[in-house]
Image (cartoon, rainbow, N blue to C red; front, side, top):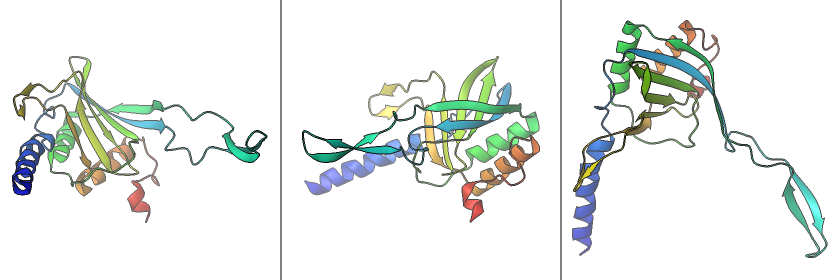
Amino acid sequence: MKRVILIFLMINSYIYGQEINSLGFLFKNPDKVTISTIFFQDKTTIPSIPILIEYDSISDTFVPTPTFDEPKEIIQKIEEKELSKKETAKLIKLIQKRNRKGIPLPYIYDIQLDFYKEGTVLQVVTISSVTKKIVVKRINCTPKTAGESLEEVCYYMGVVSDSLKKYLTQLLREKHLWGENQCFDEDLL
């Protein structure tokens, strides 16, 4: 019985793994692509919440009390630049190359690529220079299931390849979105 379950799990992960790891759904001919730097803040990016220790007379103990509410998630574009057709073609080729396996946490990002078709954003790629996480997602896309397999892939998550990281750093500096000293965190070591 254990073997049957193990075989089922292996086949299931192989079938679904093929679809989820595919970047075949990435737009290859967008009208326009923009690159943006993002300010991202949530409770995972704030170093710590100041805590006040108060005396509770009912339990006769000291109780920690946060001095303010947890921060709300804030996602704001700092600056945005449009990419040329040549820059877009190279970027698409590098995104489609197999990125490394694994999914870093937490979900923070500071680089965003928007893919436009007829004036509408149809695909967004978010990248973290801290964790090297890359997320590619189609907007207004719902995967349709047909029995056991997925017909439409809408989402990909992985780790940025070194060649993509290098090209993104170059683009961000050329577009004056990053200063000369800004880089992916791993390059600081």
